[in-house]
Image (tube, rainbow, N blue to C red):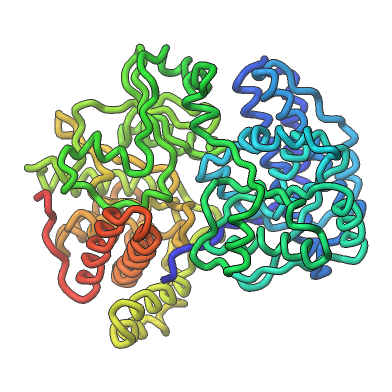
Length: 595
């Protein structure tokens, strides 16, 4: 199934360096505390992304990773910031140590490309992968006879390798590499000088290999380990720093799987460090206390689909969710009420989502927002609110009007930057492929009528930061009958390939998920036009419908397969949901279950 996609953006290195210098100068004015620590994390992420972009541009030009002054200068800045972060974390945010000006001076003096491509570090943006976890995981490296050689796998491994290097107190910056080739069979391509230096150091010490994951195959970790072992570096000298304690995914080779089972792996647990530490009050409570007041009960983990227990008393009513992809969520009972703490992203990722969430909350379209603290959005938990599927007797006309006002607001307030979101051609390819996998080539070929229309239809697309999650359980009905949207800030930049689309995508999605008939969808489009000031293309509505259904079908089928062995009851829910999308692709839309 075609479901996932990469998120990239182009930047001018000179502009990023100017921004980094400006924010570094502001650090001294910030008082000790969580806000300054957050700022350090944001700078580390930004510097790591820039280093990744510059190093990848160099790699693309020469088709191999090399050791040269520019590569070393690229890593000096995130390395210095990682040391500052280590000091801040270890001192309880009291001190951090300044980043020397010459680190930036050297980088700015180099001949840098006009533009580079940055890849989103998904762990920072989605998965609550905190650099502090790698600081904790790497603490024991100081006990080694010699500082280890550290190798980061680009992208996110660039900054994380600097963190591990800082924790191990190594003097030299880490190496970074870009594995390439088939996603499940990656290999390294190193220049002769880099290979000589890396192997010379590796023969004298242990080697720490750093990245997020592993994912479906673990082939990036495997590529680095294969390279070293093929050159006589013993397996027992390899130390792995992944983001989780799990095994390799189903696409891993058997040799890689066996080595991973034997490997020395170093991780730190988020809950153990931030939520339920054995020897102190939960740091996460301290981060948000100024917004919520003092906690009167321990945090309750409602991630991984556990939130359904709070909203759907009968398990038979639970919606199907991909529990492995859900963001971290906690329920907090505090002096000032009950709050939802949801991970929204570190650094600029969280800040952008905060601004979007603020606008939606101020417009009374989503639950009240309190703020953002070190990656977590803090929102009021609305006691008495019911998810739409359980709110019987909802006025259909009012529902369509409210949904239209919400979608129109997004279309007016959240225009997308150029280049964001899958092209219509990619959506068409995805739909044809996914439909063929389930319904056969005949159904897929029916989409061929769009082939000649993709170019003119693309001219009608006005990309916005679409909601992309209009499912019925994502809407709350308040006791007074008002409708609010939840989970509304970032699905247009999720792991999947959809991204930012024309608002017609959300109109179609809402019609599918809320069981609107053709007349109701037309009225919904009219409401969106009034609220946004822009017409909703009827042709785009027709094109998007099979694409939306095919994407949801693919997502649910893949999620069901991933969970079949580990959470079979969830897999069964996901397969039932997939069957609904299959039926909609080959038949008329059903009426809403909550009408």
